[in-house]
Image (cartoon, rainbow over all chains, first blue to last red; front, side, top):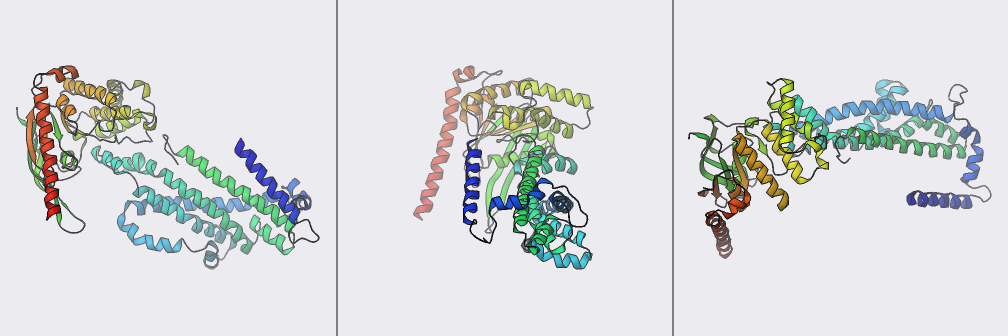
Amino acid sequence: MMKILTSTAALLLFLAIWQILCSGDKPSLPPPLRVIWDTRVLILDPFFNHGGTDKGLFWHILASLQRVIVGFSLAAIVGVAVGVLIGTSRFIYDALDPLFQVLRTVPPLAWLPISLAVFRNNEPSAIFVIFITAIWPIVINTAVGVQQIPQDYKNVAKVLKLSRWEYVTNVLLPATVPYVFTGLRIGIGLSWLAIVAAEMLIGGVGIGFFIWDAWNSSLMSEIILALVYVGIVGLLLDKLVAFAGKLCVPGGQDL
Amino acid sequence: MTTFLDIDHVSKIFPLAAGGRYIALHDVSLQIHQGEFVSLIGHSGCGKSTLLNMVAGLDLPTEGRVTLEEQEIRRPGPDRMVVFQNYSLLPWKTVRQNITLAIDSALKHLPRGERRSIAEHHIDLVSLRAAADKYPAQLSGGMKQRVAIARALALRPKVLLLDEPFGALDALTRGNLQEQLMQICQENHVTCLMVTHDVDEALLLSDRVVMLTNGPSAEIGQILDVPIPRPRHRLDVVNHPSYYTLRNQIIAFLDQQKRSKQLKRQTVAAA
């Protein structure tokens, strides 16, 4: 409760300072009250749809979310599978780890030209950018999780002579789940970062395009409103994955 | 009595990372009879857990062999179930699930209903009925170890291997569990091999106490018969006329091992 009070107070203080600093004649940024006034139509009716890219913010965010969900889901499936594979085999790990370490440092947008060249279409290219951005933390964390399975559990499995399948379902997967979700949380955050940037370049409906479009029309207030929404949605995505993690991690393990 | 578990001239040598090798155990021979309770005692690092692991099949001897009912042990199996020091329960499974996983995988040949009733019987055996649906994280150390013991006994192992099973428990819990284990083993004629560094625990539970010398090249230094009649109770054991003689023998052996280790170290330092 105290925490909510202090953070609300800090937020109000921040807005107040912003309001004061930007309230001169022709400021380079509109102050918060100005932002709310300028964007009142967008705030009050996020669901309008005038066709084309002239839509309410709800539709833009929904379009971005759809891309993220498709790209991120693919990354989760492939990432966990590859992570388990390289985590189980030292040989494959040694072979692929250097490659992954290089690829994961490539900035998301740098993949866009390549994916555009391969897919020749905006939509799959954007999804590919999400996929390739989210997959590395998932792969790497899953692999670490598999490698970190305590020797005790492996010994139990050996003494009980668990079959390969029994071992995977009873020991390997549950032991790795907390690590997988760490990877998924980092992955969803990166996906959301990447989609906004990618949409600025590929256009179409989407919150990234909305921001770029507003910039081209010099609508600073709309940009600021969109940034607030982007931040909130990003936070919700993170909390959602964390919540799913809590549900999936059985038996009082810590995430 | 015929030999049941035979540790036959077993040596264990570990290759070192820097090259060279470390001789952990040298030429250890020990025969254990069916229904016997044998303790391995020695200072830490003397290779007693290594010896236990070789009986479990988690480790293989470099020389010599271990046989159980004349079958050479080459891999782990549920007929030599281990109770590990740190319990080794799967934290994402409840007490009941931990036990049933073991039963379901090791006793596949039994019908489902029978496997269930074995699980329930062993939950009762260690008095964990009230905690059957709890996760290990919700249990005390003593309760976790009781789950591990129940899981091990449920498989009807030919040999029960205990690796410092009560080492992490407080004295009161340890005492209770020791008596419970003793009673269960007695009633079910379980053959046990236990690693411990607790002299009183070894005397209370064992028919024979095997003392290992300090490593490297640890060997069996002395084997002590414990002629205290069963069923035993803690007080009877402590009051038994031979108890302090036996206890002193073990402590004298361990002291002597400690001194020879210090002596070795001093010689090395002087050289």
